Image 1 (spheres, rainbow, N blue to C red):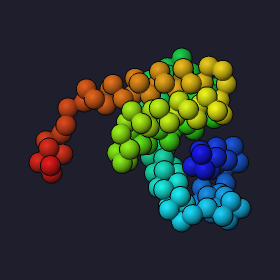
Image 2 (cartoon, rainbow, N blue to C red):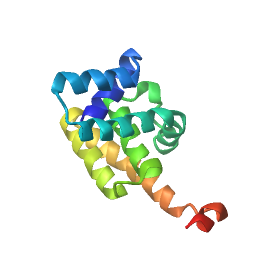
Image 3 (cartoon, rainbow, N blue to C red):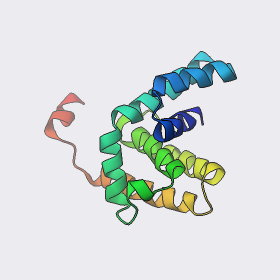
Amino acid sequence: MIALQTLYEYDIANHAPEEILQRHAEERNLQPKVVEYASELVLGAYNHLTDIDAHIQSAAREWPLQQMARIDKNILRLAIYEILFNNTVPAKAAINEAVELAKTYGSETSSRFINGVLGTIFNRAQQQPISKAESEVN
C-alpha cells in the first residue's frame, strides 16, 4: 500500500520517490523492513518505468496511458515490476495482490481491468524463450 501511494504521488505531483517514501515512513513510523521492501518496489518500478509502461500499452491498446486511471496505472506498474523484474514474489501472488489493491482503491471495473492486463503480460512472459546467455547462468 505504501509503495502504491508513493508511486501515485510521484505520478501526480512528480515529487522524488525517495522523498515521498521517506515522508510516509516517518509519518507512519514504519518498520525498517517495511520501508526497505516498499523502497525496492518503488525504485524498481521507477527505474523500469519506460519498459513497464510499454508493457501496459501493449497489453491494453485501447487505453492510452494518459487516459488510464492513475490508480490503475500505478497498481499495474507495481505488479509488472514484481512479475517481470523482481521475481521475489510468485507472479500469481503479485497479480492477486494487484487485484485486491484495485478492489480497495480503484473503480468498480478496476479489478477486472488489472486482472486482464496482468494476465496478458504474465502469459506473454511465460511464452518467451529464455535467451542463451540467461540459460548459461543457471
